[in-house]
Image 1 (cartoon, rainbow, N blue to C red):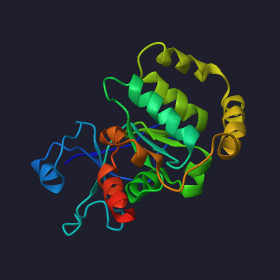
Image 2 (image 1 turned 45 degrees about the vertical axis):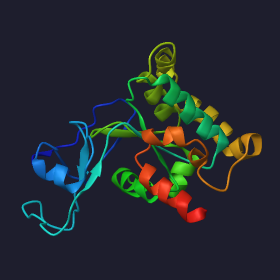
Image 3 (image 1 turned 90 degrees about the horizontal axis):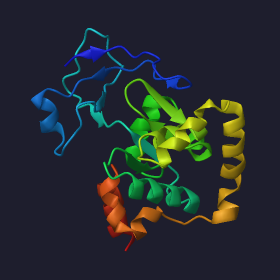
Length: 209
């Protein structure tokens, strides 16, 4: 496996630091987790050993690119996820509920915690950068077909202005749109195939019954 150096490649994006990524070309990856993985899937390796050492007793956590981590109990957020799923015919974007354990390695890799993501949802675009708030929303839209992708042109609006609008709505989203006691995707099983935490969500549903 080949270690790559992370660089700031996307304007306005926050850099991923103090982490090591590896390619997934080795057949060992297939043995670690069944399923189709894109060529640019990410592997997060522990940093508790020197860079020249190899930790043979730990299987890395496979992380996928273009993943949205969002508040799964928020009705407004859920509506946004459904809109993206319906528009994203090429299935470029994947999702994960903040409330699931599957979200933890993604937050770890970005250096954010649960409260950060509750305030501004998280979009991990790839090895180079992650985004939050209004920038995350516009980056997601850029992967969708027209007319949605055209809205990404709003990236030219200064971040403080965009995020001020985003934060104003985000702080009031429960009052305006409501919230549930559990991840809303469980009520629409047909959406689960787009979720990287689908197995956990299905298991949770069984546990709650």
